[in-house]
Image 1: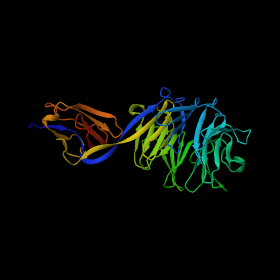
Image 2: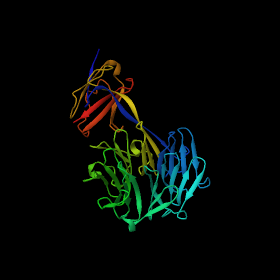
Image 3: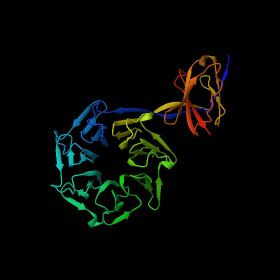
Image 4: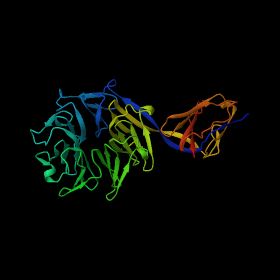
Length: 391
């Protein structure tokens, strides 16, 4: 048996790893409008998409159903959807609020007690109260009566563009021009460290994340940490934040796709590697690891896929060494693999190198690779992938 050496930079293992797959949807598939501003998932797993100009779309995994002002929605320019404990949809629009139980619509506007018809955000507290971030303060609705909060009561600014409730039931209000207000039900605390706030998201560790027009911020209760493109963030204008079951943060940016952050490093996704559009407006995660991302151009579903990764052993006549490596790595292959194509991808699935295994090719230089993890796959080798570490 003849053996040839290929020079690469890899590490082998016998583990399972999550690769990723992308599926995207737009108006051609049944989505009401490509500009997706909000995503919510109900108790049956149906996905609800709030679009800006087309009303809302319900997707059950196979079929699309659209609802507009003709059906009873207060306004087709939807900014936010929230689902309460009874399964009712609360829909914030440019023209007020709609409550939808799947059959009947009830609409609320300033005529009913809402402080302003332009609604940016909705949260529902532990007591079932609905809180609405509007262009003129905050409105609280207990299903019977309304309470309005403005700067006269302690709110830092009346243009409230985002809202969140943390694990200790504090309400956080992000404003456009005044900073952030925290409300514990009795007293107000203001913060100037985050301003022009698009989105607020608490994590399981008690940190509060703020996506702003200028950067990403984390507040741990004492200290503020800023993240920008210098740290690896795809863009500084952050519109959306979602947190998956592994505590990875997904930051949707205004013009450069989405950044996944594991607490140490950012991995960026955009239209070049699967995302349908680079202007990200919203995102939501599922317990199975799926991430739904709403953009100006439609919605994308990111699905982790379990893939066999080989490490530290020979399999299907592949032996890769040394590992880790800085410039090159050798690969022993047998005659059966000669003439097969190979590709090397980075950790977000982009192909960084490809070629063919043959008698004449005995070296592949990887000194130009950025430090990190890569994957080698040889066509016809039963789909097995070899993990690579570049130092």
